Length: 425
Ligand code: ADP
Ligand code: ASP
Ligand code: MG
View 1 (cartoon, rainbow, N blue to C red):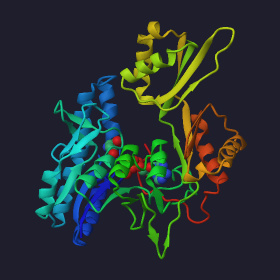
View 2 (cartoon, rainbow, N blue to C red; view 1 turned 60 degrees about the horizontal axis):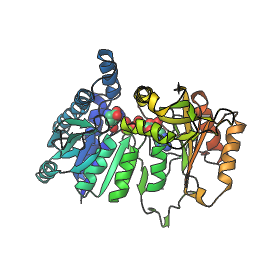
View 3 (cartoon, helix red, strand yellow; view 1 turned 90 degrees about the vertical axis):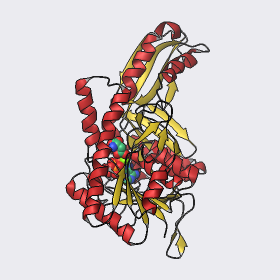
């Protein structure tokens, strides 16, 4: 039997009991004849608590030092997990991301993995150990500084190690039974998906379904690593994310027309008011934003008023980048030429994802109808081949997700979706 990479998220290792429970699971896999590499996240909400702590000391902590601080969270869980496994009579060794050979670029707080050289991990498992790796962290090739991969980055560590070690499978253990048709914390009638194609999972993840990180799915698709998302609290089979449908009994699971509904309340909207309607303006605005290394999501430009020749441009971005974006635009106000800026962090995004959208023109109309029936006002719209997203007031998001989920017939008529742990933070 081959090597498996298992990743345990923060809610699975939230306390000493959780760590002991996970240790037992890992030992089971080893006893079944697998070589096991386990990637762990920081315990519970440790990362959030460390960020809060940093902000109490400095309103905008230096990226390098924040990474040093945050990586401590994963170090705590990796060492405790190795101890718990040893206590069960099995040998385990823990490794930081840097020791595990996770090499990144040097963009602090959201570094990208550029190479994985897992020599020490390979040696450790070949010698009969269970290798425990701290997720979410790496080391910069250029600066040699410690980096982190962005929130939720342990998922990416797991897939990257699975690819580098040529693992049979990458198992992502979390606090729900798999990927559902909507977040089970919001939609109790969400259904567990047995299989989902990389493409649909990519869109769900990019639209806010944080059960898997977008970059992790991108990585898995590039290296064709099947992911099995499942609960660390139950023994149930979870969701397979892969390029080809899985077999179930003697038949294949079919591609769904609509995969699910995702929502995201982590973004804010910036409106640049009074922009001259002439060539080069949008280029100047978004050059300033990209020079500040800020990723944006949706963009909308209004038609200019004939009397003034001025227009407004709105875009959405992570709330965490809001301050930086406003500063970057203010600094370039003279060069760009606009009247004022508006910042709104009370927005939410709802997205419907499904391969069936390519061939079914009625989907968009049904989506808007469901929102209007729920009394939800739409502020921005964007689409891709297999996704449609709208921005609404943040307060409307949960209601809107439930309305869309029902309207597309996704509600399950059996059990309620179980959430085993975590605070949803
Ligand atoms: P972990 O700590 O294991 O990494 P996360 O909190 O990052 O866990 O991700 C699991 C959470 O993702 C679930 O508790 C659930 O609230 C949320 N979630 C959002 N969308 C979905 C979805 N479509 N299916 C399952 N879980 C989802
Ligand atoms: N501990 C990190 C976070 O909370 C990484 C992860 O959990 O994947 O974002
Ligand atoms: Mg996560």
